[in-house]
Image 1 (cartoon, rainbow, N blue to C red):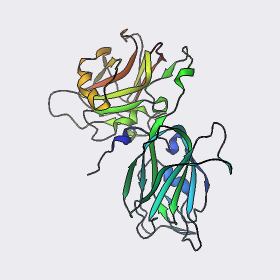
Image 2 (cartoon, helix red, strand yellow):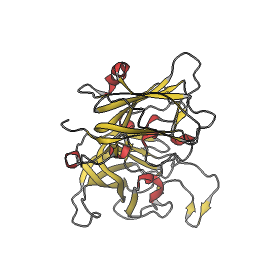
Image 3 (cartoon, rainbow, N blue to C red):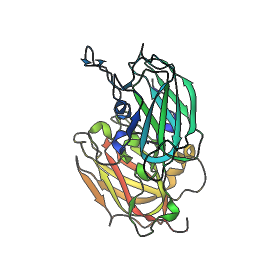
Image 4 (cartoon, rainbow, N blue to C red):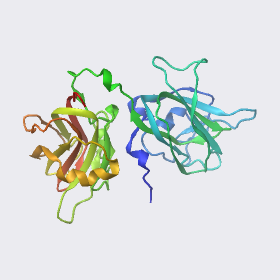
Length: 332
């Protein structure tokens, strides 16, 4: 059984789908470093070899025959504050690095160079083969690039860097319409009733879902009630329109949905579930259809600025994306 760590609720800043890429690598003879930034779980291809050796789904350097260690410099898909990292060595058994560390920098423009000052965000940690390693990060600085060091060489299947996208909200144009639920703007899925088939955080991903697995889907409900997910907006906002997308969900989309909202002051993420019971109705119950985008604006109730919403789906099913468009709340 996989343990969910608290920092995994945040967006993966090193996701290739967001534009994250390896811009420099000391060595990736056996397997290209960009592979470790792919969002899908690593796979094993039995008996598959290329010109340099066994094909591996991740970054793998050659066996080092001299002093030093290997490293890869990653440009994050979006600058942000790092809350935790996952170092995944799936399928690397006799060829994984014994340890690794992580450094970071912030470049307002361009990429790091020989004059860049790097800061350590994760000291050297032990690694095991064919394993997942989770480490929380206690640092409030925003970063744009990472230097991932492995000692002395070897292979890593995936590097995931969970955090909060950085945005200077004090400089935000109050007339600009944004999607405040988007993970790129700091939106976070905090809690849900069930995520048996698809993770709740997927509904905040950029772009349209690539398949049913890239959405939130609950198990078939066999008891009275309905399913729900709670989302924290990136910033307090006045919501003007909502999009609920059931892309790819055909025989398993919800019959209908509603949305509650509130401006939450104080408290913690862990306390939000009980609070949501009494939130005001932002969007009354609306009928949904399979495999399509549903736009709502005239149906919204004027409840003022909000920081959180709860999407209720009746009775169960799958949703690909949730968008909450509006303008930044003044005097927050």
